[in-house]
Structure formats: C-alpha cells, structure tokens
Image (tube, one colour):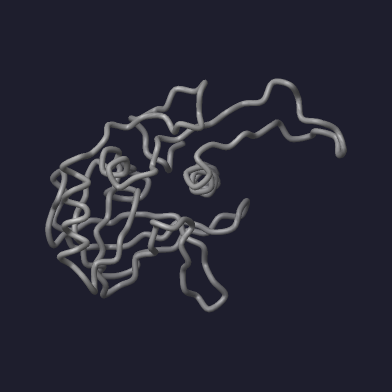
Length: 193
C-alpha cells in the first residue's frame, strides 16, 4: 500500500509538473525565512505542449466508450487520487490496444462525489461517454495510465481528425524546453515518475 501511496503522490506531482513544464524542489527542513540550498534538484517530464508531443509519447491512442468506474484510489499524502475505468475500444488510432481495457488516471474528488481534472487536457472519464485517450503502460493500473483524454461525444469527426493528424505528425518524446540539465526517461509512464 505504501508503494501505491508513493505512486499516487508522484502522480499528483507529475500533473503539476506537466502543466508547469518543470518544477524545482528542495529538501524538506529548510528553516523558515532562509534561502533554499544552492544545490537544488530538477525533475523534468517529456514536452507536452502540442497534440503531436502527446501523440508521440502515448503508446496507444483510441476512441473509447467508458463502460464503468472500477475503483477510486485515494491517497493520504496529497489531495486527489487515481480513478480506474473500464473502457471498450471503439476504434484504435495508434498501437494495438485490447478490445476492453482498465485504465487509470489522476483526478481530484469533489465534495459531491464527482471527479475534476488535474490539468486542462485531462478529462475525467465518465461512464456512458466517448473519449479519445492516449495511454502509456502501467501495470499498477491495469492496461495503462491515461496520458491525455479528449471528449468525443459531440463532434466525433473533428476530434478524430485532430488526433489522426497528431499521430501522423507525432514528435518523438523529448525533454521539456524549460529543462536544460536533466535527461527525460521516455520508457516509464507519468505514474512512475
């Protein structure tokens, strides 16, 4: 359980880091009112500025229908948690996803029991709705971790064309431009960072 809590803590941090591009952190215990140590550590994620960046990092991209919520895993150390959803793949766009998948994503749980997104391109998956999702492998969450989700209920042709174009012009994973001294690990999922 401690590993899962640590993973979920890292997930919350990954969502913030992706939005900000990079984050600097220092060791705990810096006395109040004093400057951080001269040697700070940097942690970088792959660039996700464009759809082409997201398409390049995602291992699979598919149009899915959300069948049901499987589980919500809350963590103690930070707000939010992981929502696991069972989805049916309607149309694979990149990779070879199975016909049905259980996938996890970072969400914030609201007082009314609904879920809120942790970053702009990260729609919480709701049962009965269609999305185009990009996933990366992560066995801790079933068939993968949601790297991005785009609602596809209202204008399916436009959304499908958007992601087909992004896949056709995808950019190989690269460090975020704000990071100038850290190598990006492109083999692991955001959940493992």
